[in-house]
Length: 277
Image 1: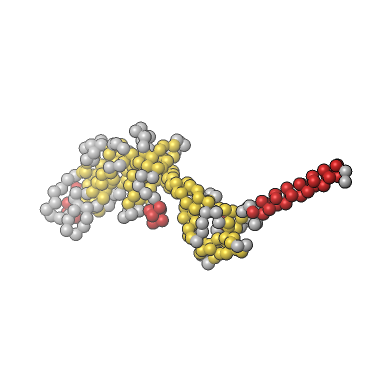
Image 2: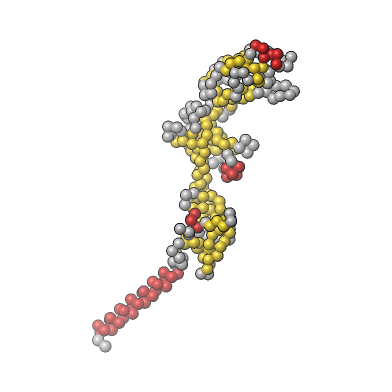
């Protein structure tokens, strides 16, 4: 055998061996058992909660009627600025006849603070009650003191379980400006939360203005693509590939964003699951 024939055979053998080794390595890669598969991995999911809220004073004053009478005139509007001692409500003169005989008659009700009118709960002609043995005093208005401004939002029971005080938030004003804030108060009794701006200078927004609130929650968890979740009879599950077989694994889902979802169950990091197109 001439030297060039020997060289050609050796080269072909070497190429065949390389092709065989590459084939074996490719077969051991975890992404090749199926085209529509994904690996479970630990990720940080940034879960964004969006709400709409209205600006309000952090220290509201609830103005109730001190006497039982009828309202003759309302001299304030929602969102208006008021001075301490300014007349807000005028009672009808004959209103004393409808109240307890020993109550002290006053012709009008004045503002106890300087601030803004957040909301009005009485109209001309309404019968309002002072504090007595039969009725609680009627709420006439909610006043906001000058000082720090917060944004109030309403929460569902699901939101109350997921949010925590101190979580970072962003307030998007009507002019498109973003203001850094934090969740300062969560009340399960009223199903409300208070978002407090972190900036010293915050725009004085009217209580009638709706602003958007975004609350961010970063969660480190075992995550899977959303397309891997299957729902059977209202119960979520995933198809895990084990020993060459597809096994349905019941799971619980947690935090989610547009692409990934937190999964809890008989699964581990590195497990291969099928993705549904």
